[in-house]
Length: 307
Image (cartoon, rainbow, N blue to C red; front, side, top):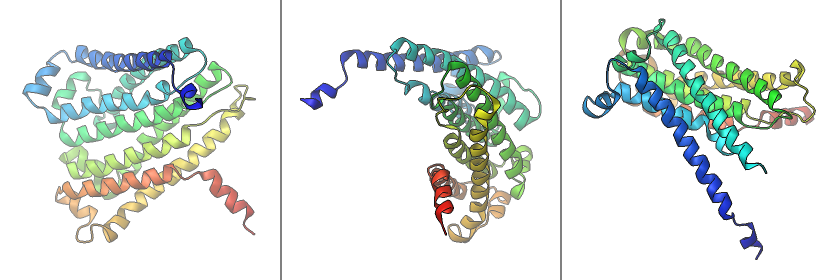
């Protein structure tokens, strides 16, 4: 009897269906906006008839990133259904705007000049891989920033803005820092090197997984919106970011020695041998998942009680 009483009511299913419709509608809206902005070619032709793989990769990366970002919005359940749905609509529209802004940032970071939406048609494969990696990692960061609760909407909005900015900035910083290793960034930019793009892209997504954990969390009920309220979260974010970058970068030479023993990263990049880099990417993702799920606070408590 108690089991039957705990089952969802018919209204719960309707709310869930409503969230699904709203979520799909928001992603479809973002897709339509890009379609409108690509004025010199037809997206359907590029995807179905031309089979433009880099274009398909970037477009699907945008969609996947937005779906990931909205995970935090659809999972919110309170006693006020209208508020939940309104939060999903407003937050989802915000995600659409942020992803449009991210496109501008990626143009600057990866191309060093604003190319606009029409440049999507002529994106090379290595650049497409990196753009896709950034969209997925950005979705993870935004999802983390939208996860948790706050005493007021204003305090929550400020915190979300702070950590989205920190998270996205950290991803760009990691791209520049890690990109200097093995000449990865130069190989992608100048040589359209897919092997370099896979390695660099896996680091970006892996770091996104770690940053999502660093950002996600509830704010104190006593928070007033003062700067001091956000300091602990920023400190924890910084710890996770540093650990994440160090672990993922240190993992690369280890993989050289223990996994792909007959080939080095430098050789793979030089010879444009991208297939083995997929194996490395899986290990990077796995390491990132482990780091993301190790509570730093528990480690700190253990160290504190150690005589």
